[in-house]
Length: 215
Image: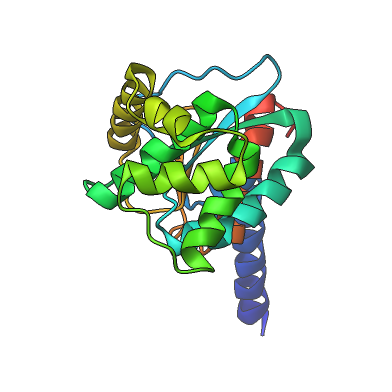
């Protein structure tokens, strides 16, 4: 009987020590679901804010599902984060057109009109955008731009530069699929490892808290 009590006490002590170790790790480490980059990437976030980078494609149905979740999360996080978007191509020509579409809208300052609209056109309406001309016609129908404006932006040096930088970031973060998130230029959160889209956002918030020193 005494031996049983000692054994039970030993198990209790072990559990307490284990829980203490998890608490010491902090919320992000306890959750796991993220990787630390071998080579940190530079960020341009304002002082007091943490860069959160979404890797996505307009052609990805999971990204279409994630877009309203991310938008709501961004609003809730407020000034603590600066969310930036990096379209990926994974070597697909159709996704390269859509990546150019994002950067062109950014250059033309029409993302507020085009970002959600392009997701909806592809995934709700079944539309296809296989060429720059397809994108130009669509943007001209939903924003105050001409098709010529859009084509000029999509073929510009600035958009080519951003596209190349985006490809480098995809390689640097070793993006396995979309959507994925980078935090503070140091961490990669993969949706599968995070246990889903909400898990990815929860881990991102934990990492932001750690970066801000608000544990």
